[in-house]
Amino acid sequence: MTDHATLLTPATNYAVVQLPNRQSPGVVFQGDSLFALISDLTTVSSLMDGKEIGEARSELKFIIENLSDILSDYENTFSKLNISLPYFKSDQD
Image: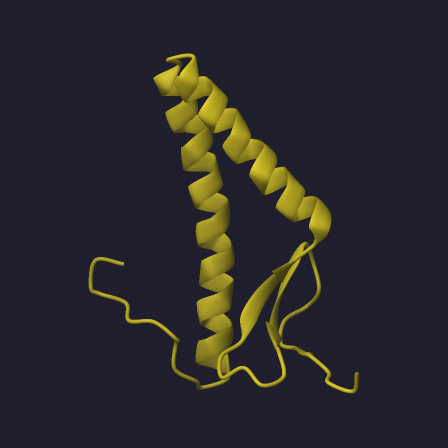
């Protein structure tokens, strides 16, 4: 295989990467970061099953904040590279 991905941000727990034959860059997560995200979501699910809605809401808010930070970095990368986002953002976003 001779295709190569292009790293567009520093490599941390995730990175914005341009894959070959793809129009828009994507986000690549480290395996342990993906595992942690799934673990956190599993915890939210368990809390909801146990009717611990307040704690589930708090955990879910934490996950959303972390993913929102990643999305912000993703969007800032697009802006710096002067390329259009692959989705439409409404004024509410």
